[in-house]
Length: 247
View 1 (cartoon, one colour):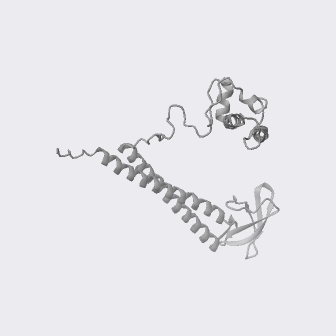
View 2 (cartoon, rainbow, N blue to C red; view 1 turned 180 degrees about the vertical axis):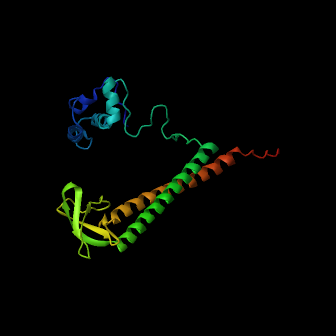
View 3 (cartoon, rainbow, N blue to C red; view 1 turned 90 degrees about the vertical axis):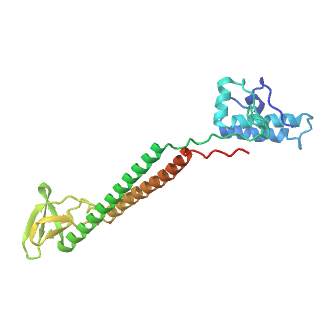
């Protein structure tokens, strides 16, 4: 049967490696030693015990946490053989797990209120995104496209449909811009050719805003549903139980 390694045993010496060995070199050393000490291939009568010690030592040193604990004391902690139960727990006994603390009604209501607010913000963001999309669509339908030439002082110049030469300030680029070349694609208002906008595709902007709005709505709904469930659980736990009838 596998036995624990003696307290005085140096795990690094057992594997034949230096304490500064890397994880890959440690694994290679373990495989080499395992081939030498495996009971099926070794003539040593103590091969089974040595092999079990080797496996236990590698189990400690191959894990970053347990290796760090071992290095801090270099051997005072007893090594647990593979498959053994943790300290203080009988072999085969069920291991108790921490039970999640139930939510209080106040915490449940906080989740519901915050979730509702987040969902409302998402709905507002969706409405703003739709309004921006509609506004851009209307302006693009009413304004006329033209290729303008960039001139000094941040201005552009183009020829309107009526033959008028227009020089005006270059509009700010929104969405997917036109770059920084000598020309820029713009749209001008036929009623006032000096009023121009960039002829840019805003689809990327609209999709990004729509995704953000959708995440806010879904996240808010999840918090509301979770809060309502926990609130029902908390209220049920606070209800007085009916007394059990005496036999």
